[in-house]
Length: 87
Image (cartoon, rainbow, N blue to C red):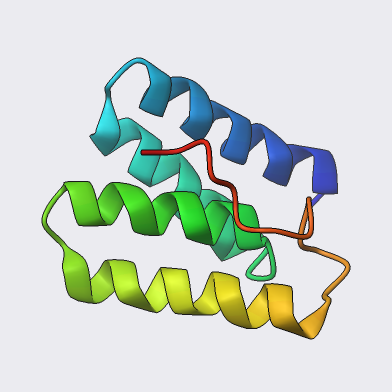
C-alpha cells in the first residue's frame, strides 16, 4: 500500500476524533496500524480513544507499542514523540 494511504487513515481518525465520533476514529486508527504497524502516532491516538471508551486493556497494548516504536527510533514514527494534543 502507498504510505500516503496509511496517513490518510490516520488523518481521517484525527478528523473523526475532533468531531467526537470516537467509534469511527477508532476504526480509522485501527486501519492505519493494521497497514503500518510501526506508526507510533496512530497507536498512541488509538490507545487514548480506547481508554476514553473504557477499553483499558486494549488501550494499554497500543500505548505500549507506541512507546516501543518511539524508543526504537523507527523511521515509521511520524514525529519522534508521543502526541500530546489528544485528550
